[in-house]
Length: 517
Image 1 (cartoon, one colour):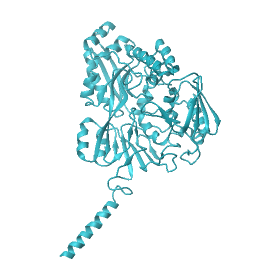
Image 2: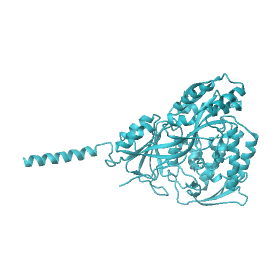
Image 3: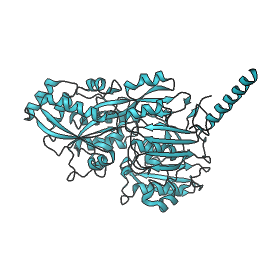
Image 4: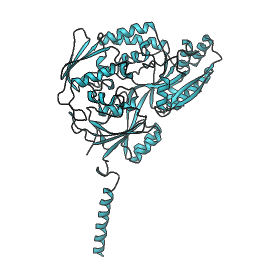
């Protein structure tokens, strides 16, 4: 009997070992799979750094591309592909001294030629890079020697380092630019810690660690970013062990994840403002009183609590309160004031309009729009809610004013550079009218235009802050948007996973992630 028990125990042990070896985690451990999967809430349209395809694309790009410098949490800057830099006395020219130990994913050395080719492509209006609007004052790039390059502006620019510290400044291979041309969105040759393995548009991006990386090689060797627009599916992937990170978890799912013993919840502050935009060429949205009435008629707190489940903070201006340059706006929920303004504008009986929204690009985007439509009935405004897929949505909203059929729409705008000058220039100036830029309201204000020039040229940060306060107050008075709320980034992270960083722009960064012992 004792011998039989021993044989049975050995058989069970062998079977268990075999089962573990044949499981889905082959190559990793039972707890930590070989391939790290991150489920994100939007669609990835292109991996070309100079195509403005939204935050989801930037999540993948940040793992494969790098800029000359990086911005620190305190707003200062540190070296990245450039070891050091200096600014000319007149504030127009930035000279960068490049690292000499950096290789692209194809094994070629990174030199000044690549930096020159990158920024020349960015500035080439014939190419039509959507991100050239991020650096509107950049007029030239010059090679000094193989590892020194100059970026030249048409005058001092107070936030120039902010502008190039992110995706707009991602450096690409000159050879790849020449070889792949318009196909760079699927042929990635960067310098970053991960290399592209496979990209299926709107579905997933798989990457592997760049073992020749000039910095610290990632501990997680295989990374897969999966596009999952349904929040419930992202939660189920975490609970089933199919994903080790998931963003935009609903408040309703927080308890089930925390109780599962598989993952923990983290909440991070963001500077993304979810807003309603107006086409100012459409009647009666061309009437400021109407736009102000709409601002007063929307109960933002009710939406944050009732629709988001508390996963946000009411927005009181077009940039979030954690952005440098922020100032409070004037609009509170005041239905009587809204009705008074509608009457003054001559629209006491209301009107009908359409409002466009994606579904699943932002957390509860369609539900928020439906709630807004319901609230605006109180001032006799009827909104026809129309839903578009993300790719079509971007194309249709960003048309020339004489071509667009858009009347009202929603976007979630992050402040890319963490200071309001970027948002003011990129979203509210005449030069940025769609389709070339992101002023999809077709807004213009002469006083704002003058202030924007002063903001750009101001290198003293106290002066810039004062000017940005003034500009934001003008935009608020003109009621160009209805800023609704800033998201709280609720993420699920598998137990034992450390080192995931989440930026205020809602970008998770995985290059420093690792499994704790």
